[in-house]
Image 1 (spheres, helix red, strand yellow):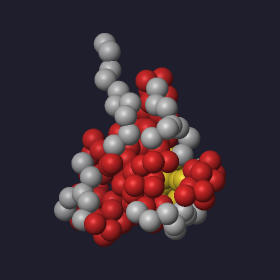
Image 2 (image 1 turned 45 degrees about the horizontal axis):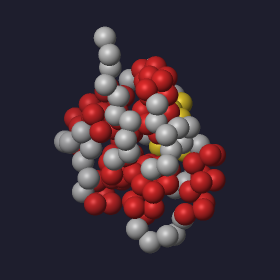
Image 3 (image 1 turned 60 degrees about the vertical axis):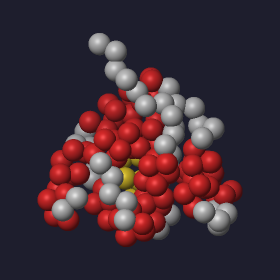
Length: 134
């Protein structure tokens, strides 16, 4: 069975990354609920489960994000790259430009999916929608 991987960066990926950045304040980790609440607060974005899954898979695959216990963390690599673009006008556009040159591979996504299995993303997403009505 051939799995279809989404190997292109989307605006939703940059939006998710921006929400994560805001939810963590650029350090430490944040729960998925915190990230989703932040996205909603910033511009009314409500991510679908699929968008969250794909954004996390891609961001984990390139080493920008890690998931430990029940929190999502920004990596030192991301913070270093982000330091170069911080404060450049439109945050989402700047983040998308930062992501665009990062190559995504089916293998990288598959490895990220394996790592994320333990996180039980669907459960966290469901808790959020039950609590806040997604």
